[in-house]
Image (cartoon, rainbow, N blue to C red; front, side):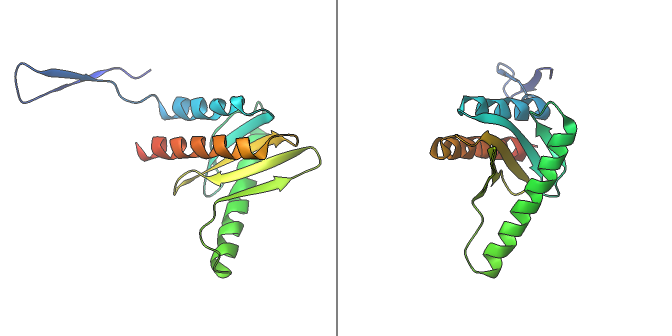
Length: 144
């Protein structure tokens, strides 16, 4: 855990104690686990644009790495299609499978948030919550 640091003001009578933000890995994991509140949530991951995992909630690292690589491919393809067909910037993508859903959304200019959900998930609620978490992840990553 990070140790508090002291910043002294110009005035000799004022001292301000500042705590640095949580370790980035811990902070991102905390944000991902906030998605547990979405009924039907299975797991989630934050990945770089090149598909390398930053943080995930999977029990198996292989599954997380696969999801991250494919999520980056989905976003890259969707952005290219949008640009080529002049449809504007990419917002999110949903892939529906027999047994579940994959929701992929950008989390700032350098990261992607991918969520695996049960097929019965309320998509409106999931989109609302995932969008909120994506914005918080973007803010966390901008801190570094």
